[in-house]
Length: 138
Image (cartoon, rainbow, N blue to C red):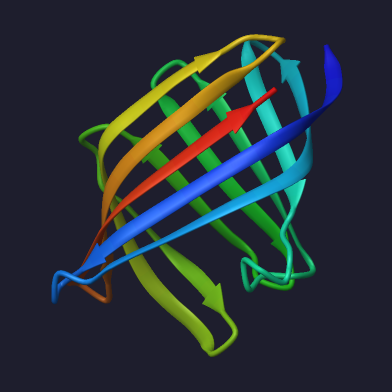
């Protein structure tokens, strides 16, 4: 299975001061299945601030891996209850981020699906925000 999809991405976060921000993006993407895992790929846009970057999300069992290649490469692993620490490229340089997922849910099939993530984000050992990321495709 390999097909083009319409992907809706909703992200929100609440920072240490209690300020909320959210964004919604609708874009074209690609869905395929390989070795019992689903893969979603899409090109980042100017709206996301990462134009020139391709994002690939792999979903298998209770884990979601998000990899970005191109102008701003990064790799994030979401597995409920397990902290993931990695380097993250930004327009201002590289930083160390810590991701602690509190919810990793997905419901996927060939015709439509969703990925729902909630996680705490830290930078260089300090709490920065509580986040939610939802992806829907059809």
